[in-house]
Image (cartoon, rainbow, N blue to C red):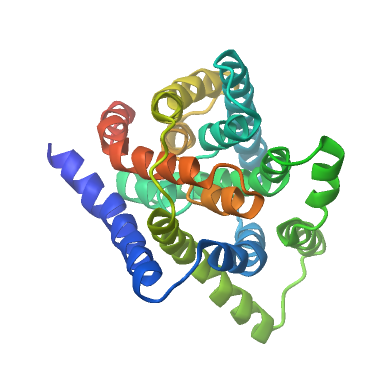
Length: 303
């Protein structure tokens, strides 16, 4: 019980309070989900991805193992969710939303703090790499999947070229390869905008909650919750053996795989109009229920 209360107060309560400010802003200031999601999508998130990539200090071996682990876990979750959604005969838009909520966990503002508090600085370094990898996948594979909710594969691929975060990724890789450094004014500007990304995403959840009705896809919501909170860490456990993860890398990988659905999915759902109320409901539900699953997982990992 003590661990449960600590996890809630340190990780969930700040998220819920931040989301509450978004709810109040939507109610009293007429803030709309689309305007806020566009600011996050086109300004804050690209800066966050660029800043995380150029700040990484892990070795090539660390990077290859954690990146490989993350890629396999996320893609296998996507495949499993797609097959399950087809078996449940979900309509196209709901199927896309279902796959997104299962594939991508809240590896940033939830997962990073969780690893730091539970396992310390060593695990935080691996968790940061997990987060960067999922961010790359979100702004590539995730964007294509979200686009498929309303358009063809060809249109989705061409739409991907319009996503600014991809250019931020390419630019960051160039800077890393040539060991370049930004001029101080630009560096501070990107750092400031990067720091705003996660709070804005938390506020957006509250705005979306105010503007959206509770999703009536109850059975699909239940399946998505089970897949995200239970199936995901179970799958990650098997994949970790494949990549021989040990120590802090193993702890970070399993813990990051156990986090609730990423708040960023509300941005994609709103931007591409793929069942935003369902996605928001899954984000809220998995976040609220996560202490019930994360606590025993942390115990088993030796927290």
